[in-house]
Image 1 (cartoon, rainbow, N blue to C red):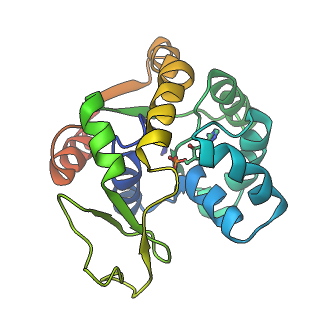
Image 2 (cartoon, rainbow, N blue to C red):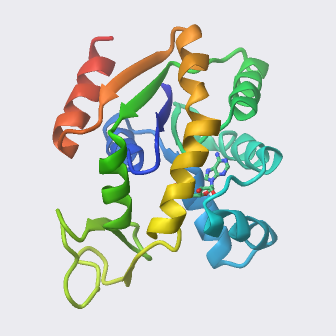
Length: 215
Ligand code: AMP
């Protein structure tokens, strides 16, 4: 099963992607997580990517395409994968199609989560995350402990530097301009399946699994 999670920042694609990956027994590949890891390890990639990420801009296509090309060739991807945060531009989508076609392969579905704009800003600015295990918290709906120590792993809980209001607004504009056109790209291919992303985590996960079990 080869899937893409599509949706604006804050639409819940990461949360849904990880749960779905567990259910299907395939990896969830988050390009944002790969880049954050590189930033924290201060690798050459991390040093280059940091300036784009902090401004809420996209890392150049050729860099992202190279990362994904390598990652999906790893052995844990043999039974499939979920891509979360890639592709984000039409050239990235074309490159992905081409990479898969080289192995006579293809995506199965592109799962798009639709969430209203106001809710996106609220979700992103109230999001907090564990630096160590990535567990997500939300200061309104799922508050972190006052100690800011993760309940799961004891790691430090922080606010992503690109989840501040100013950067969030740019990220949403970049999404509208560069990523939204992917909906019609995949619709033309007959691969797009749209889900209402305004519900609870469990409701959305349930609808996705129901669709995949009986497409
Ligand atoms: P995310 O965790 O998916 O919200 O990604 C965080 C940031 O990483 C984005 O705002 C971009 O700066 C960068 N990024 C992640 N995936 C991509 C991609 N496919 N193309 C370009 N930039 C990306």
